Image (cartoon, rainbow, N blue to C red):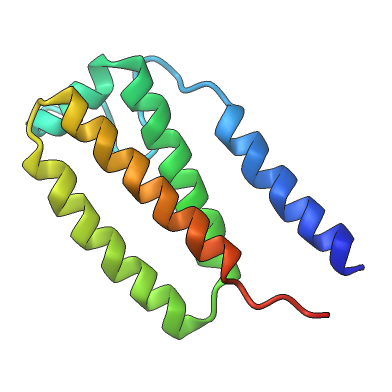
Length: 118
């Protein structure tokens, strides 16, 4: 049973990481919005950054559903801090790419720390 649940969760996360992004939208905001910030414009205009956004927000949402309230709150606080860091990148695609890589690594580490039943 434990192995089945773990495999299902991992399969869901891996599947979400391989899904292509739609060209005009990112998972966490509307690319058609009129008041996009510089980082959001860069993400919408760059397929790799758009894909990173989709991976990050999907992984974040999956983890949010798996974590206990205290840990979930910490992860949400970390997300808000991370978002400010990404926004500070402005239109610098490499800075944004690095921010996503670091955040996905943090989320992966959070997943590894989840208490699983025996």
